[in-house]
Image (cartoon, rainbow, N blue to C red; front, top):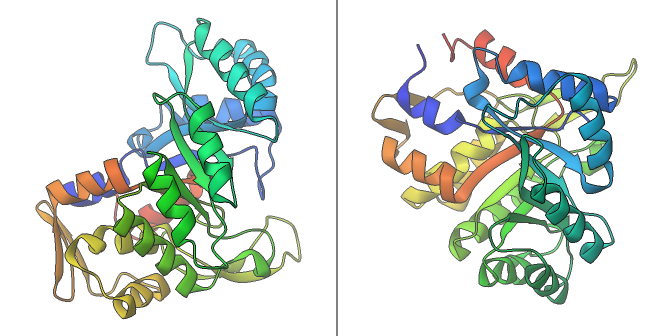
Length: 297
């Protein structure tokens, strides 16, 4: 049985991004998968369906063909990726949400590499939509994350890709999490987080795929959770580099590692306000791996 603390850590954690690499599924297959996952025994782990604004009409067509989503049930929650036409995409989102489709865009994702871009994004997007701004982390992201927080937005980090060079160094990931915590900025992560713990794996599903050391989503979210206990830089890096959960304990009252502990209430707060979700082109891989580790049984 899943402990209460692990359930809180994993609740609605996976934003399904089947349209994106390495899966790159056609729209009808990705929509069908999401519809199926909503009735899966582990649907409590499922978050939003991720779709580019430019493909909203295509998504609607695919959903209608499946007679989904059911307008009488809980609406599908969507995270829409905004392209280069910020004003145009915001208008398309408003038009989409103004219809009766059984789906709602309540989050958006957009890239920015300058403070003035972040300020423009904040002015353009309605406050009732959660806005995640993907920022580069090669250089110190402090000014960008500070601007994200000052404008009441959220940050986003890309933690992998289909080539080894797309995987950021562990120090950069630790720094991003630390800066978000210091600024009280919520964040999500995307790319390369299909598996619970860090390890060397194929980066695509193709034969002879390049390989790389991928981050585990538990590594990332446990690092974020333990920031609430004053996690040191060295210990953050140790967690992010861990290839197992040795030393971690999950019980109904909280999560512990070394001398750190977060209560069940703190884990819930972390997930709601700080480490919000991760995007994955697979929902089955995270669930199946957790099952194999004995964490969901």
